[in-house]
Length: 88
Image (cartoon, rainbow, N blue to C red; front, side, top):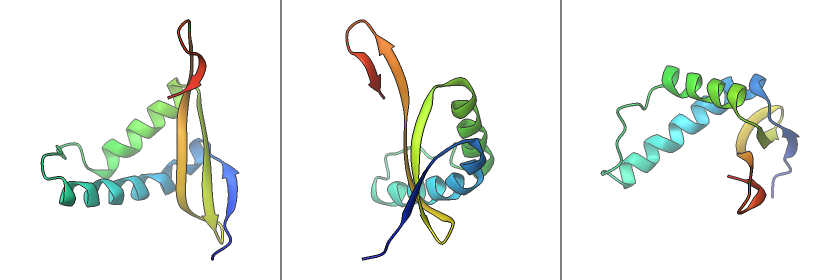
């Protein structure tokens, strides 16, 4: 089993996240032909990620193999009366 290092994500990771997200979406479209992929292009994905990191309270962790991002998970932190503080 490979050993990965894990680091918090920040906007500087967007260029590495973008192709991972793009490739995952391509594979999902192959399996689920009903998915709409009209916005499936690198510039749109990158600008969407930039907007999310800028406008939202995002927390995330990246998995790195030899300083290369190979996986990630992130969520928006929210607070409301019903759920209290939660990640979405």
